[in-house]
Image (tube, rainbow, N blue to C red; front, side):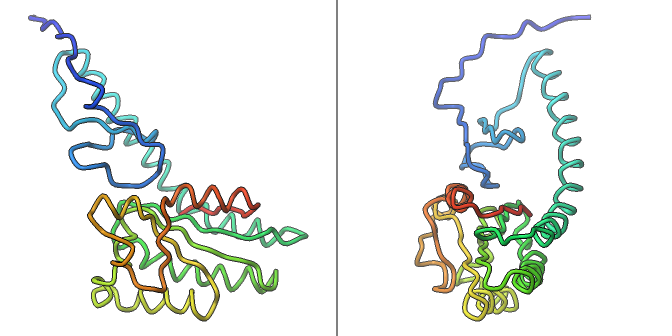
Length: 210
């Protein structure tokens, strides 16, 4: 058996990037490599040790994705029920949406509408907001209004009739060369989706993640 000696890495600091945000898309030229939002240049790994690490990373990533998918399906409903069981109303509730699925809001928005109705039946005038900052946010572009006509109608109903603020991430939008003016007026473009979630959390809002 022949072993190949692993060459010392020559990657510079500019070839690696760490993102603290939970936005779903990696910057151009980078690939997503784990749940800590670590991005690395998309280049093949060489050497037996690196190949072993890659295999372990793939197995771990798959296991985490399977566990995560189950948690995501159960968490929103369970969290809403928990809020409904409170004796006193919280300062508000914010629904955080971050997904790699461009059609995710088709399923999420009707559920948010239902949850908002139930929450306000329990706590009158409870402030409710939505922060979407994954790939799904691009379905809310003005240019997508025809392709996602029903979704846009539901968003308008949430914002105009039910008083639910809907925010998208301006930083993520800029990665695709999209500006605030590329979204309709019934969608609020914030500087950074994760920071906006933290702002709501600081105000005492309960964060429910999809």
